[in-house]
Length: 152
Image 1 (cartoon, rainbow, N blue to C red):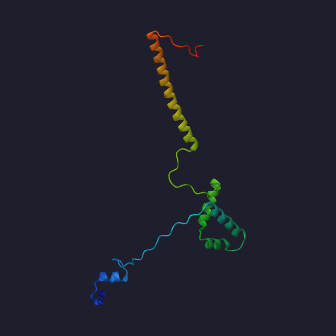
Image 2: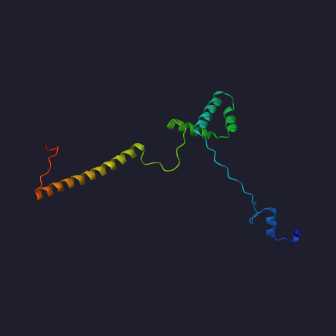
Image 3: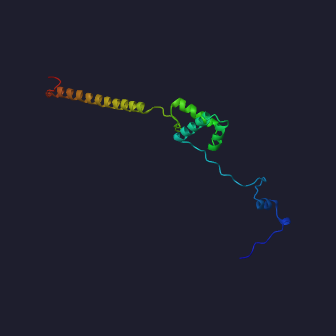
């Protein structure tokens, strides 16, 4: 296999020079940085952090809360948002992403029962119409109807 030939610097084009140094056409570095994943906290982690933050404040030591925040890698805005969430809903469970349901479970069950009731009423109306039709047919043909429990 032949060895690649070395091209003297004065014979390289500017494009080859940028490529050699790892630069893009604009002259910026082509190095890419992997985006950081957003950190999520479970409800138990949030409760632990709030409890530890309260303990740091209660210690009375100057800078204890700030040191705690740096150690845990969180912002004070996290603590205030979690406190508000705890006060508003009583829990630290995050809301599910996406559109909120129009109906809760109780309302969905009520709608399903109303729909079933409408279907049964329609069937009952058809059955009553058929019974009336049978009565008229028996009257026209002169056939005696059997006695029903309702007439007794």
